[in-house]
Image (cartoon, rainbow, N blue to C red; front, side, top):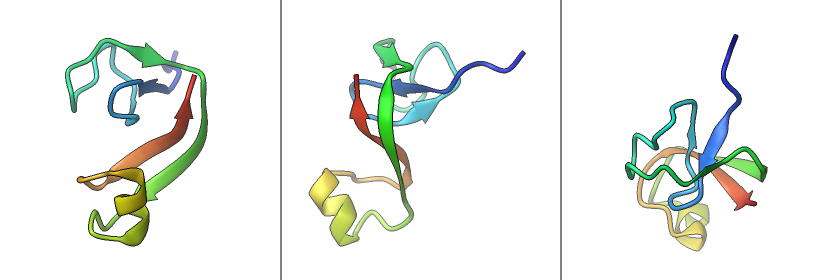
Length: 62
């Protein structure tokens, strides 16, 4: 059975693991809203969201 997609509350990145592979946090949530895919970390959207790396991010984590 596939694991439910989780979002790290610290860096807001998506993961299927029990520990965030990006910031090593265990503070994960299955309650999130909105998804943004950052391809260019120098874009205006990435700057507004304060994102420095390409990836899939949640807009809100509950």
